[in-house]
Length: 224
Image (cartoon, rainbow, N blue to C red):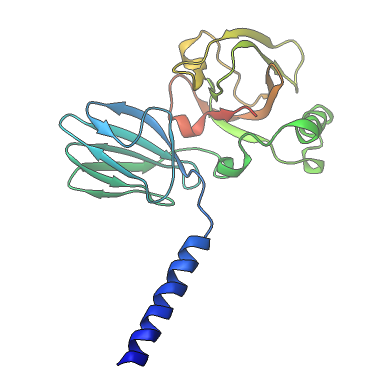
């Protein structure tokens, strides 16, 4: 019995150590909307696997999963557990569907900076995209830019001359700037660079991009 107990303790210790050393997973989804009583997440928060969100009376939350392009609307009293590609929902009403998005954006957003971004822009201008990293593809004509910085944002088309915008940016809730709240809509099929102070991003607008406030995961750009 003592030997069995000692073996169980050793197994438990090893299991705990394994869990302790397991790498934490990064964000998998963005909170696109919050209404009513919701605890555990706020509008435009990033959420990670295992995160628990509770909905009270009148509660509604919309989650967009960046890798799977899975778009969820969850309402009513209940509990949401964030997964890797979709949520587990207890009691609350659940509606979901796939929406157009760049499935690589969870690892690609915010990495088109420095020499990598410059290479992409040069490649777009020279019409040789195969020689450079693939830029982010937006499926909405009005980007949702994740940034905490203020200043003058410059958006410039790099594949066709003459299209350039300057916008004075004050991030909403200190988190983001939504082009859907401006009169600026980018051209479907166009390739663009976006700069704010020292931050930078490049992207291409899909030829079939949707106008207006389309799902956030399809038009999300992070500046780094």
